[in-house]
Amino acid sequence: MSAFWAVIRRDWLLAMRRKSEVLTALFFFAIVSSLFPLGIGPETDMLRKIAPGVLWVGALLAAMLSLNRMFAADHQDGTLEQMALSPTPLALLVSGKVLAHWLVSGLPLVLLAPVLGLQFDLSARAMLVLMASLLIGTPLLSLIGAIGAALTLGVRGGGVLLSLLVLPLYVPALIFGAGAVEADIAGLGAGGHLSLLAALLVLAVFFAPWATTAALRIALE
Amino acid sequence: MVNDYRRATLRQIVAPRAACRLDIDRLAIIGQRFWCRQACSFPCIIEGFPPSGAPDGRPSNFLEKCQRLFRLRHNATSRTTAIMLTAVNLACVRGDRRLFEGVGFSLGAGQWLQVEGENGAGKTSLLRMVCGLLHMPEGEIRWNGELVGDIGDEYRADLLYLGHAGGIKEELTALENLRIGAALGGQSLDEAVTLKALQRLGLKGREDLPARFLSQGQKRRVALARLLTSLAKLWVLDEPFVALDVRAVDMLCAIIAEHLQNGGMALFTSHQAVNLGGSGSALRLAA
Image (cartoon, rainbow over all chains, first blue to last red; front, side, top):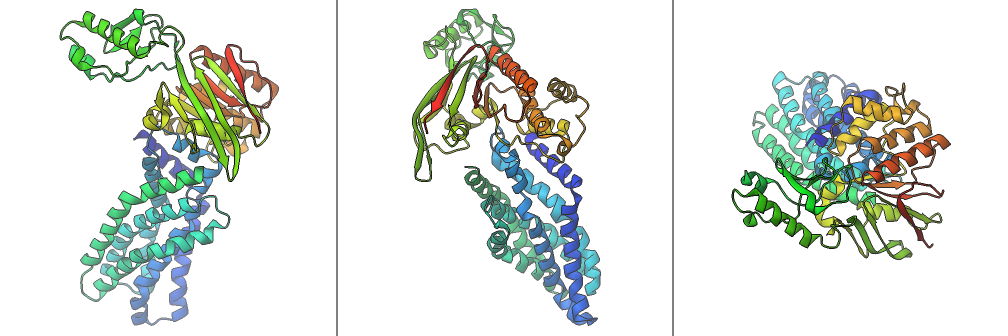
């Protein structure tokens, strides 16, 4: 278990030393979601309608940005081999890496979302639901993304392939995540959507590290 | 008290950095473990120990039983140096080319094996197979008589692999690299030990410098410092002498020789002839 925390601490430390990677994703999220109100104009009804979808798509693409670096650096400098040779199961270390990835690139999106929501004239309640859906949804994005990142590890031009692999798998998260906010605005209650999103997360927590580990072992051969 | 003995998992000989020549008649029970009186830092855990055979309240008889059991299991090897790593009939297939086949070796405590061969002969592949990083199409590798695939974690705890890439993070300092590397292996290092290891490898004053400011050779030294802090018995080193200056090569030889004297094993590839003393051999892979 100490190796699990060591992985998280290391990845956190690395992210703090190369802040540009974290900030790039964050600024990308901010700019992409700001372009829509600028392009559409100040029609608050329209903006309120598209807000959940736009913010979710923005968060999803921002989370994608940092995916291909998830294992690439470790693969290149031999750390991945050392992780595979650790007495601690690789799946546990991979979970640590995914958790670190979420802390660095998922959690900031959750915190930034309400600020961006202001541009869309979202109510305080809708913003809370948006944050909740992102809080459940972004770990899901990291977990699914890890599978894609592991599968495309060492592949030339893996970045594009990664998007093609992962984006379809993000669709359920997008539907339920954005759906939660829309349902809440429509007065239907967000409970159902959030529950389904949480169910997906539970499923991914169990199976994604395992699938990622299998893909990493293939990449290491 | 006997219950305590029962609880101790008696699985295999664990001798981190201690003499591996085991004299079974000198086994003694100290605390909850068996110790070899010869080298007192040598906890000896016996495989397949049957708790049912231990008579209650009679530790002396208990010891005899264990000794007998141990002799039975390690008959051939208990008096001589125990053979630890054996590889039989290994083959390597890359694409539709067979790089080598029928390769076998055994490596006992205090022994080294240098793998030689031309570029592309499969030296690195062989080493990665031994580590379990590469799938073996044929043959088997055993650690203390057990297939390495079956004992997974236990084997990996005894193994230290240093590949072409040393696992050094450019953004982290030498100190952080070493401590995090050890933590990945499930070992927590305190700062004093880490600093001492770095100092011995000539990195004094550069402990707190991010690794990207170090030269190629110095980065290599940081990676090699792991040898000094690790408790692993089997060292698998892929071209350990690359990028090192003459003095560092001598230093590394001394470190490996020390490890061998402490009952360790070293398996490495190198194009240069090295003098490690002790008992060692070379394995030539024909291309």
